[in-house]
Length: 211
Image (cartoon, rainbow, N blue to C red; front, side, top):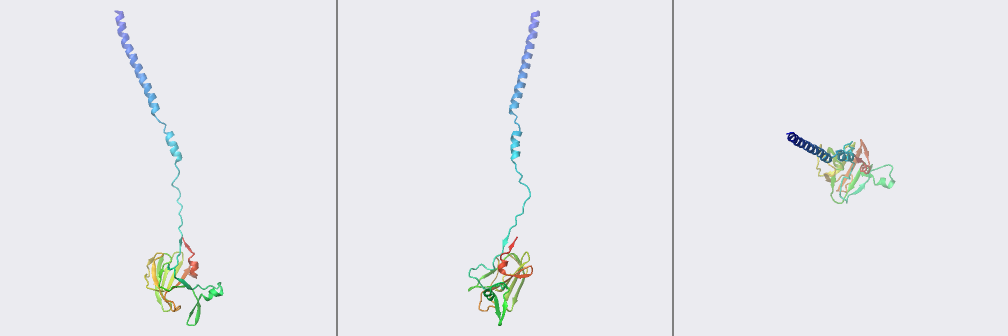
């Protein structure tokens, strides 16, 4: 009788022990497996973060410069009369005088001429401020530009702009014409330029850079 009771008690106890051991082993193995599967984010994110460079900073504005062009593109156009300057040599000064009704006058611009008709273009972006006709110089177009610059196109015909028009550099504004100062030339352009209200040599005007 005693032996049977002991036997009945031992078997359940052993079962409980074995089950407990199995659960403990499962828990331990589970932790080991999960620990091996968990990755350390620092090994991934740190190199990426360290490699990121600042891309948003102060944007530096790049100034774009624009060069003034001559009032024509036809390569056959030449200079008939230069801009008069007191510092020029005597031979150059003689080429810078205009004779009208037996009176010699210093040329206040450059007189361009050609054997054939040529297009007259705007030397720079601007606004047309005057279009008129003169008895001696013929049709005259005045364009005002930025930075106190003004260009004046005299002795032209077939005027293609009106007062108030906005023009872009290179736009055709007229065709070469004639005047009474240089009667022998039927295809000419008398070109004058101003900077801050003062008359300047067009050849110096071309070298001004517009920002």
